[in-house]
Image (cartoon, rainbow, N blue to C red; front, side, top):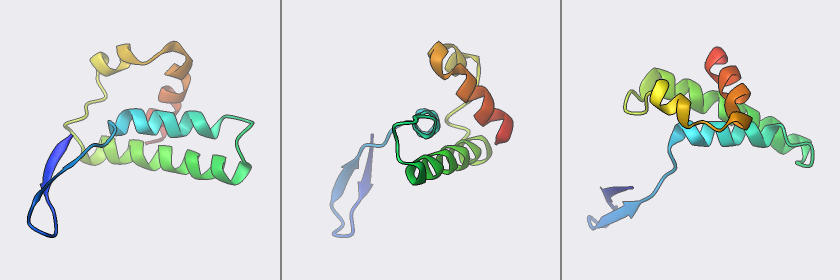
Length: 86
């Protein structure tokens, strides 16, 4: 959650997901066989690009032991793939 200045110069609150979790979510979606193949490709690319952006440009979202221990077991392989690629 963050307060920003709108174009009308009034404060506006925006709420965005943690980009680390969003990257994991998109990558997880890309592996769901019930999802349309064109969407799976898009999800996989978004997950890779977002994790790369986190690693390169977002030090406020560390990929440290504290974050890694919060990752559920079913997402651990996806996290390993993403961090190896990015």
